[in-house]
Length: 243
Image (cartoon, rainbow, N blue to C red; front, side, top):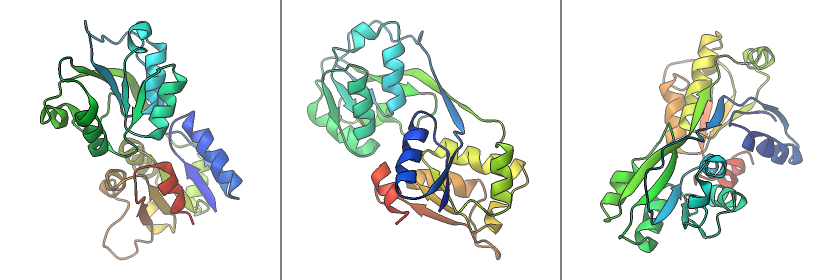
């Protein structure tokens, strides 16, 4: 299949390599560019641990001017990729929830101490209100934005042409924000995604909802695009959809 990967780098190239190894033709078009906020105000501390919901947060922590204060803390990561990124950033004590926000809350509630607040190293666009979810378990959380995702303003001409011609057979979507950006950019370029036979593979129901909100899928006649949702919010489940 000819596939389009829309996630930010460096994950986009890693995913593309995995897909090419399976025999697919892949175009990489990151629709979001991640920028670390090296001067983000972490607050005075002390903290009982760090919470991360993205590998981007771990990389931003490694670039932060106060990283020496963060690296000794225990990290609660939402999944294996974010946990691996935390270890690569030289955090020593890392626990992974291997799932989604609800799994992360269960992990934190079961293992975090209550005497100090946790520090959530977050992005500027967050899908879950972890502070409220953890407050229900008596866990205090300070949210600090340590990275921002800047959206692309247009599709590359070659990708625009391939989409319009129906040459792209599948698109992989990893976040609600990038999925919404994809639908908006295609619409702005005059590409009617609903009329194409392109299949859209989404990491979660939230990601799929962003596509549908962008007008990709509907009940009206002539809609051919199909949205598939991974059984679990991880890449292995997403790539399994391609089989």
